[in-house]
Length: 268
Image (tube, rainbow, N blue to C red):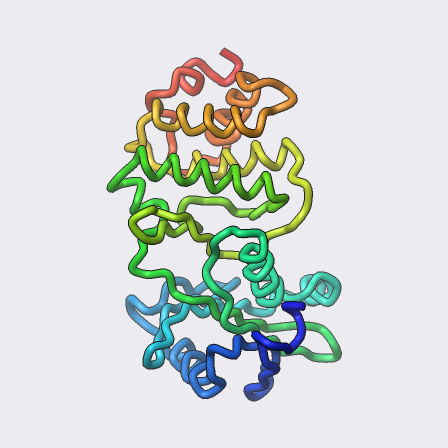
């Protein structure tokens, strides 16, 4: 139902872009946000590379993060013809997460530019969660509480059949005094039974994305809570070795400091 106009969403067309917008976001405000995104610079421009342009913009009371996915060739366009453009997938994922009782940045709009029925450029507009810190900033300020919150998030996702696809701490914002995790970067989300290998990969993504300043005991406690509530067929110890090995292989922020398994080698 999220993919068609109805009580909560309306059709929208702005130039060559067409899609859906939340009825809570008036069309003039959406157009203003897109104009601000096109001219964003400095701290408002969060990312700008060959894959995407991301900005944090505002129009009056409407504050949003706009993510524009750039064309990436015919093969990608053909794939998106079947599965939906990246913006459409992010819009659908935001609604699907919220329907499952999982917090995410509220989807405000998605728009696509198509040619011969193929989606080329697409844009998703999500509610801006700032000033709530992302998982990296929160981990530097309060490592124990942040790691516990991230473990709760991973458990909630996997129990409800959600595979985020890029579960890094920077793709999570901790909102409010209760530090409720809210997901962003939604285009890779899939709703399915999450197999054990995907669960291990997600935990490794989270672990590798956290800096060495997060102590090993906090990481172990978070993993133990997750494994106690959602056990692994291979056993907890074998699963922990796998998470450590995959984390190190990612060569992200975590070097293995303070981890006996990392220091001895994953097979130690």
